[in-house]
Amino acid sequence: MKAQKCPVCSVGILKKEVSTETFEYKGMTTTVPNYVTHKCDECGEAIVDKATLKESGRILKDFQRQTDGMLTGEEIKRIRAKLNLTQEEMAEVVGGGLKGFARYESGQVCQSKGMDNLLRILDAYPFTMNVIQKNQVKKLALHREKKVITYEDFKALKRYKTNTKEYSVKVEGVAYGT
Ligand SMILES: [Zn+2]
Image (cartoon, rainbow, N blue to C red; front, top):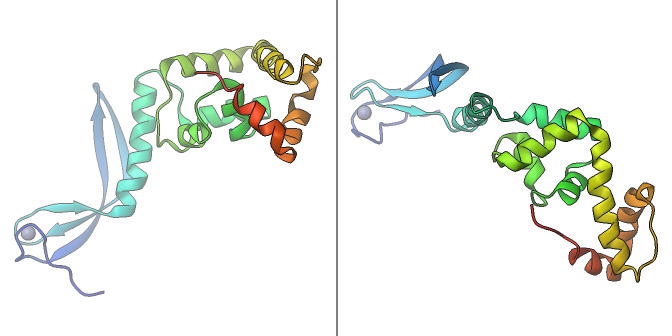
């Protein structure tokens, strides 16, 4: 690879440096290993490597969540696994948007305080999922001309939804706010 010129001073040459970087947030510190920067040998400006920026961003968001007393991506993933739901199913049941759970888990987006509390309750008392699903199924039932659907049918319903175009339209009207 050709030596890259410094975009700041246009004189120096960028040199790759790998270090362990320490970050502080609200009085707490965390370290990010393998922190790659490209440092100018003239002006001393250091440009953070693209991949490092992405990875450290994920680590730091989790660190902030932890410091703020919020669930981390790994914890959210664990709770979802405990409930045995896919990311899409999770989003449909508790809200948060179609891609919301993928983003909470990857650390791209921080969940709201309300969502955080809901997930903690579901983690501590998984049976409370019945309360949410009961509400959901009740709404689905209304759209199916008041035909009774059991809660156990929830997953089957979802499969039905994807197979039936007409039904999926009705389900869309069921979506409720987070
Ligand atoms: Zn420079």
